[in-house]
Amino acid sequence: MIEQWVAMAGEGDETRAWQEVTRFAEDLPEEQAEELAAELAGWPGRRPMPYRWWQERHRGERHPWHRLADHRVVYVDPEMLDDPDAYEECDGGPPVDGERQPDFASGIDALAVNSDLRRVALATAAQGNHECGEIWLFDAETGTWDCDDDLGDEWIGAGGDIAFSPDGALLAVASTTNLPVLVWRTDGMVRLWAAGDAAAWRTGDLATDDGEYLRDAADGLPFSHIGFSGDGRLLVAVSAPLPLHEEEAEDRRIVVAVAETGEVVCAMTAPVRGGAVLDRSGRRLAHVGDGGEVLVHDVATGALLTRHRTGLPTARTLVFAPDGETIAVGGEGAVEVIRTGAGPGPEDAGPRTIEGTCQALHWSPDTLRALVAEGDRLTVVDAAGRAVWTGETTQSGPGTAAFTPDGRALLTVDDDTTEVIAWFLDGGE
Image 1 (cartoon, rainbow, N blue to C red):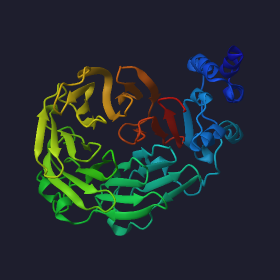
Image 2 (cartoon, helix red, strand yellow):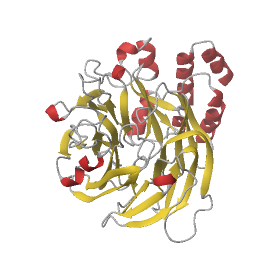
Image 3 (spheres, rainbow, N blue to C red):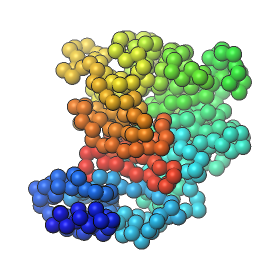
Image 4 (cartoon, rainbow, N blue to C red):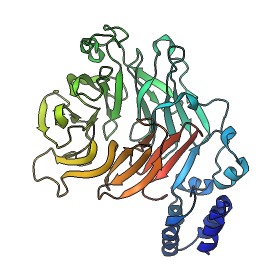
């Protein structure tokens, strides 16, 4: 039977072939469903999760045949579909509002998704001096986009980085505007707070270059990185490097604040390359400094606790393990695992070779995963070095792809087709 469907898909009728596969698979015993999934490894086409399976998944129902699907189209502009009827039959979903949506053509600066794949957030690029970027929030259950239209004259620029809290209740943005950090509650997109002129957020003292590329030395530098602690209680923001100095570890502002209120817990200036991360409890903060060195600070006092040399002078991405005692660092051609706490290091510590540049890291309780970019190709590699997903992109940077907070899926966006796709990294279950 599988040969018949493969032939049908190979002859250009992949939509109907996949529909027949999904109907056949339903109610199969687990063992037979797993055998069918293995046979589909070389399927000559896409394997989207049907909407009926998607609804089961969101109701908490887990079935073995869900593993046959390797992705779910979370959103696509109806006007961009070649065959809307085929899409509706194969992918389906709630009616979407095609009138109110992001301007995908302007480009995507940053991308985030919550763990249950219900909400997607995009930061669109600014268009020169005449049009600011925007922050958009999509609800996959209702098919609607929301945008904060009340940012006013302070929002002149665009979002540089964007992140959901682990539970998906909060959305945070680091921006190139006069509001360096903003936080919304995702239900209703209600703005909770925005960083203002408090001393902790000021970066004017870092604007010590010739000033040619800066808006005004008094304004300082914008913020370009945002992230949450594993428990979602705190967030960390890092100011942007000087223009044309992105690859250097220069003094940058690091601010840790209470995610719900914006109360500053810790603020410091330190040499940073890339961003900074908090451990699960929010007690420790780590970042990459000069020569790929990893520096770990105590959040309560800002004191430097430990520093660790790596073999990655180009490192700029890092992540804490769930135990809080181990850190993975990614750079050009390698990912390295180091032990930061007391006791013996992990058996698999040291560098692991990758083909390309590490763009993002995620460490779930199950495994470490790295998003690797090489040319127009993206690959997700697990701790054993196995490629668990590959795809192509027409752009580079944080707007290309993003892990869910739980690391079980990768979200990609194609600004040509407006497709926002969640790729399952551990099966559709």
